[in-house]
Amino acid sequence: MSALDLSRRTASAYPPRFSAGNMQKAAQIAALVIGIFFLHNALFHDYRMEEVQYLSAMGKSAEEIKAFVPETSMERREKIKQDKSDLEDLKVDVALLKREISNLKKRVEEQDEYDTKRHNKDEGAEAGGGESLDKLRFQEEEEGEVEAAANKRHLMTGNNDKKVETTTVTQK
Image 1 (cartoon, rainbow, N blue to C red):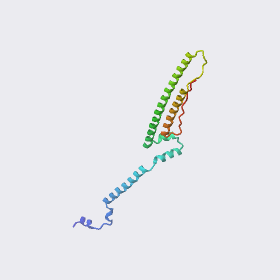
Image 2: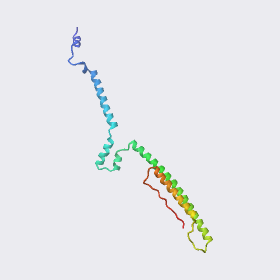
Image 3: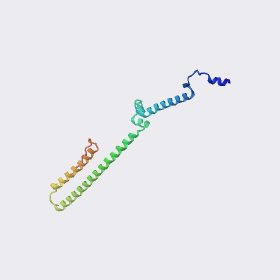
Image 4: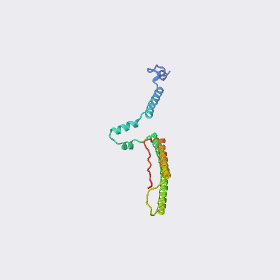
């Protein structure tokens, strides 16, 4: 037997758990645990809010903080949703205003017609406001419809604090 064979048969001072293969497995397990720790912090810890609080404590304004801290995807989606809602509200407002403008144009034309007829009919007679009662009722009903439609739209969109008031044009 050679000297090499005897060294292999000798007892080891260290148990087999400290072998190179077992140390590599332990390092892999430790790396996995550390990786899970970092992933958990990245997903569940709100670093953004801490940064906003720190910047506001430093005396930065809201505009400066927005420059440093970008919006989250949820905030962007909410902003887009709000913009779409505002656009729909504006479309309804434009439609109501167009309707009111056309009504006002009709009233102006009717007034012009009425004035010319009266002027031609009673050139020497006294000029006065003599509108028919039916015309006034029609005007009040139209104004009520426009105001009711606008208020209904605001109630549906949740803007209860906005009350739409329409202007009235009376004929003399």
